[in-house]
Length: 560
Image (tube, rainbow, N blue to C red; front, side, top):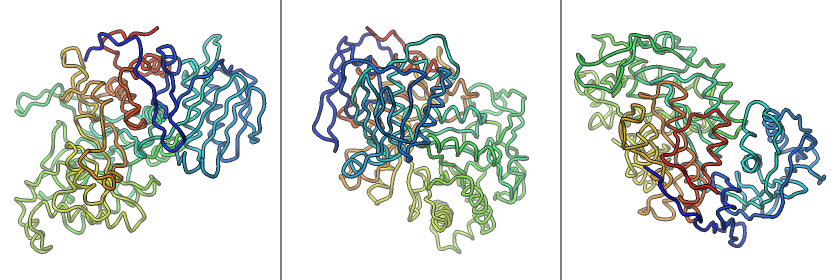
């Protein structure tokens, strides 16, 4: 996609009123649009006169409920400026202060769990929110009004740290605004995972879907079953170049690819995310995508007459978990440890791309299908998934899986992640099940960003340009208003078959993640791609300060 020309005037920034009062016009000139380059776009943004100067004498004055948020902001400022701002747990007014005030009454209902109001004036900054997440997002918007260097991790020179005066009111459209990371195909170091979470939080995204098990590698330590990581976390070599069907034509690097997260690593990441109001959703694949687990513990598989290695090529594996009681118990014991590490409500069990050929060829499995009174292998997978749904529900958790879990009958309490288009999500919502939309057409960031593939890194295929991401609408028009309430939101997918390291992942993720963040936060009537493109250059400077290797835009965007 080439952005050859953009109008000198942005489209109107008229905003939806939501429940916060009458519609108010925000920035209406190109200059205003680029000065107030907040991403995602707020519900209400009203420019005002003057600037607020952040200095070494600025204090943060906060209600007790927001003290942790205030200290986090002070630390971020210190990293960029070297200043140690004083945080006072008294939210009274003071000249030049940044105040964090917890609202009550009617405004609490209007702002919800993540909404906020932000007033920047020459004499001070006031944040109002009903909950800590809203205060956190308000300060993120305030940071975006400051010079991009505020995102650096080391002080730089003499900068006038000033923010333009403004009034903002803001509430997100969706409660699930997320991004996925596949650590199974290519392991991603813990420190990068934390950076990725930081980047999500900077974009006001609140779900991190951590894909931890695969045919090509098991990445989470399970104390009861140490061979899962001792053996399952390391493959002998990795396919080089694109996947080819003929084994004789495949080329490998000859280098082992290993790595896993200890339980201490995971606790550290989960705590780090919680400080930034990001909930981590772990994924433990079953019954398919389980070749690494079967390599570690062969009795988990159907084929007792053969051994298998951790998978070295991409694509799907024929190896599938057994459906006997012992295997079900084994996987539930895995989930027991997973639940101790991840306090969030959702546990993802995969459920996708489970080839049934080994089940079809197994006399034991066919007898199992008959004994359970099931019709076929699809109903057997549904039975397997239901065992996990019942188990997780009993422990106060909610099961989520890819849309294949609809096949053979949907488990009673399941939430569906719809990746094969919209149909799975529509079917689930019509059956009164919650849905997270993740269609490949709009959210698969492992797809190419240009039709000129020769100039792009090798990818799995597909084409997903920035404007298509921005145009994503998670709620299908075929749903009734009641059914639409089951659409929790959506998320980006980053599968790492062809993404080998953190910098390659950053290139594939950004700025498409910035576009998706706005698509999920900002109500559709106030979204405008031309206006987004006018704000994006300022945002890319923030990504520069954060040392993000994003994909450059195809042509120079018009800026004043």
